[in-house]
Length: 402
Image 1 (cartoon, rainbow, N blue to C red):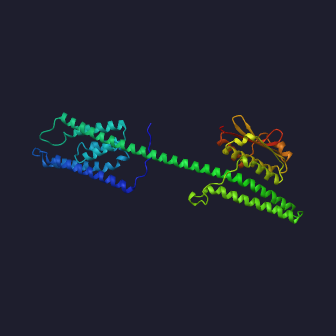
Image 2: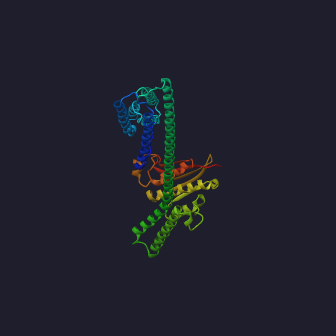
Image 3: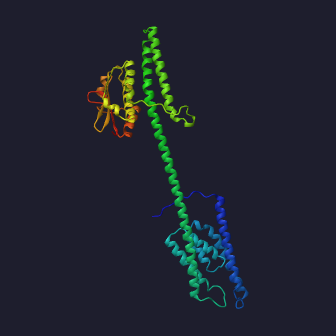
């Protein structure tokens, strides 16, 4: 099977120069051989007309061979055989024949090399008898010289072909490495975008849900609230909005250039130690939250505790959005492994939804997909959906090394 290597396009000026200097060398070699052969030829025994015919044929065939050489890239074997055959009757075509054979051999195809080499040896041997000479060279000497010269041209062609193949291989390898590097950079950027999206969703989703809750209550009950209650509700909305903006600045801080950062350290991320504050905040907003926490969970690594905190936060946010007024149960336990199991449950808001929902079906929220990705990165498991009784369950099992 032949492997085709796609080479980069060569500039036109470079191609023209490469072909021009090769043709100049071919013509100079042909003229040198033409002058050498005919200047040493004894012409006493032949007529002037016969000598003129020989010279004319030599020049005409040589010119045709030189004209054919530039087309060797389109039909290497055909042009090579024709030019080599022309060298049989023309000393001016010998240089063109040598170039055609070398160019043919650079393709490194055994059948083409054999045909071209045999043609050159045959042309060199047969051409010896076509030139007038008083003392012809013995055939065996001509054959040996033809074989040696042909072998030398084949060796040169193979060396050039191997060098081109090596350069093509290095060029292809560099292109593969460049593409692989680009793919790694694209993958890293996608992972960073996903990480930022998860962080922004986790941080802003909880805060903005509280803002929406209090703003909705203020909108629907604004006329029945006393001025003090209105001011208090507006203060809660303002405080939650301010907290959301502060946490948004903290998340976007990872996008800044470290040289431009105003602080030297990133703000600490919440862990299970911050869970009581999160639960109190949810209760303060009117949610009925019951929580049980295994004391052994305090030994969990910060990375695990941070993801557990996000699971509870997302569970409370979803309960506030989709099952407002329903009691929420939060359980944080340590299971064998060791691993941390976080479970957030709440009844669904409408009985009709319970009847039509498929038990165990996971919703397609971005926050839940982000939690599933977090659990996967830690080597844990995540599930979210309604059970057979219609209770919405969010559960994550996050292992850690003891």
